[in-house]
Image 1: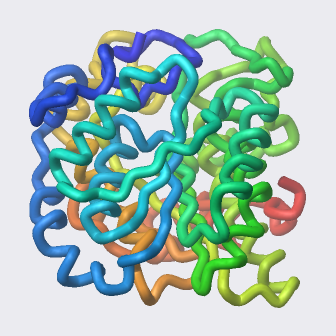
Image 2: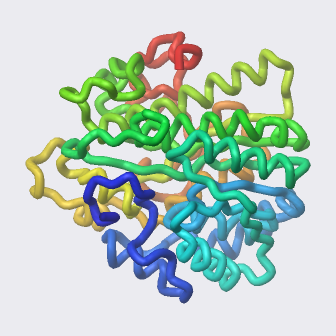
Length: 364
């Protein structure tokens, strides 16, 4: 199912969970295509000297941190000295155990904490219970990285959560919105709290279709339903949420909490396999171009895909609404990008002057 079929399971998970040996990187490359990590090993070596001093003693919570991009993000933040909170997803206990083992092997002495209550983003009740447990156990939170997500292709049927919400939208956006709201007191207790939202270049292709669907986040028109379009809309929504959150923090006089966004580029993950990119993204006949082929020719390993979000977590010069991305867009060194200067700027919800309605952040 993680190889491309429609599923409400988190597609960042490799079949069989995270392996407990050092072959996890190879496993991902074998399953999803694409290269081995090119930049991540150097970041593990160099970033402690660049960012470690300001990360020691801080705490980061990463959703989806037990596999794929999230696992590498958690590993790097642990290497930099963060105490890393890894939510356990009910039913994925083996994956969690493997992730803890993998990170501990890569970072001896890593400070890893599994909150007592698990987190299922497909349930608002679970999000509230998880956040309540974290608030009870912690006095502050320095970084909340909203990384977990799921995808879907243009041929996938609409799925609904126990809350009656379309599942892609709830998992990618609405539950993260709720989690951020519930944990905001802990972020405000930090000297420099930060929310990092994982978005995607899929958010502005095609921009017009995405904008038209802002009034129906729940994808209620089943005749026009397209799971990949829902994914695009959810990632556009992450950008609008970031802007709206920053606006409200600013109006409230909260100057010690900011929100940023990050793109993973074309990372070879199970979510892309769910998308069936050749058909959903490039509009080619189904089966004409495989996602594995796109990963091999244009993509990067999930380890490298986690670096923009990691930089968003640790950059001491980060400001409200900053955006971190691979240098080439699809792959490459993580950099702070300028959303007003890329080729899709007019369709990018990161920009106030884009073709998204000016009131879109407030409306969302």
